[in-house]
Image 1: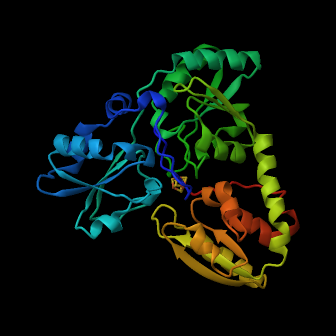
Image 2: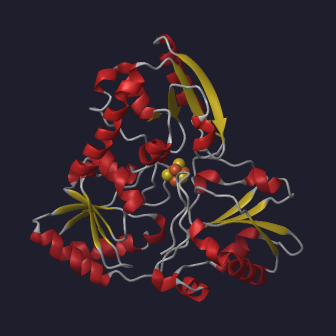
Image 3: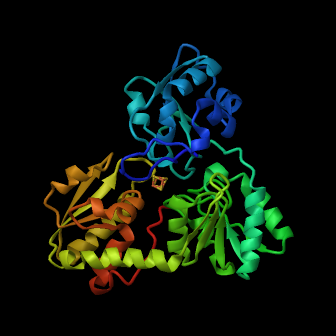
Amino acid sequence: MIEPYHHTSKPFVNRLHPDYESFEDFLDKYELEIDRIKTELGTVKDALVGLEIPEGLKKFSHDLIAYLEKSLNTKIILSGDTCFGACDIKYYQFETLGINKIIHFGNVAISNRILPKKFKVVYVPLYMKIGIDDQITKAVAYLSKNKIENIGLISSVQYIKNVPIAKKALTAAGINVFVGKGTDRVGFAGQVLGCNPSSATKVMDKVDVFVMFEGGGFHALPVSLATHKDVICFDPVSGDTNIYEYKKLLKLHRTKLTALKQQLKKAKKVGFIISNKFGQSRMESLLKLQKEYEKGGYITDIVLVDFFNSDSINSTDFDILVSTLCPRVALDEREKYLIPILSTTEAIAFIRDPKNLDKSLVFDQIN
Ligand code: SF4
């Protein structure tokens, strides 16, 4: 499958699932929604249209550009920079070429964050065309063997069309299925983002576990950390069953925070990191938190970033970094930074009760 947009600055692995190695396979397996793109873009003949695609799709850059140019009768300019998701539409980059129409592949819009009016972005989620009958059979057997009666159903956007199908089939098998609709940041009932598991937290009190019909990786982690439940993923692409156990994930997270405690004790200078990405920027929370640190006797500064570069930030003289960026920067990539980095919720825990930093865990959700 196509690697989704990546949330953080890890080097990208340019890979698709082995079964989908050709552009034709890609066209076969994902919905490109050309007719909708045409309608929403309006007249684009003799115009330039910007294109943002996930890293995993870049291996088909030329094929995709040629396909879109032919289908839409326009000239496409691909953004070669890394785009991290719907939170990171690079309208300001396209603006330098006078482009104000952009096609963004791999996500739905974040409806509670508004782009400047003159830009028209067509979001194409790339829904995956894959049946899940076998995985449903597997799930029913697994849930009945483990005497699990109440489940929450969650999904990333690529697989979201399978949610009603799975709900119907699992309900018919006698399982109580709950599908929550989270905050406005998510587009669909059941949809979760790497920064927003609110569709899961909405129903967490009613369920024993969460179930996904996909590989899980990136999206299962925030759901498990925020709900304190295991997430069981039945992957229709690989056929694997992946279980993300809350207890194990919590232990790992705590161990990482415990390792920072000595360094944090001696800290004086704190760098608050803010993003210019329109769907990540959290200035209000940053300013509140900064005040709290200043009251606590820390020296503080604010650092603005677009692409958060570990080499560059590692050269600064801060003793602590507080990341108000995508929460996955601190959560998944702590090891890359020579300076201890805390997410927004970890930074709150640290300033209020430093000794127990590693005991508390509140997922740093962006709303
Ligand atoms: S902020 Fe959310 S949408 Fe943006 S890259 Fe991070 S997880 Fe994805």
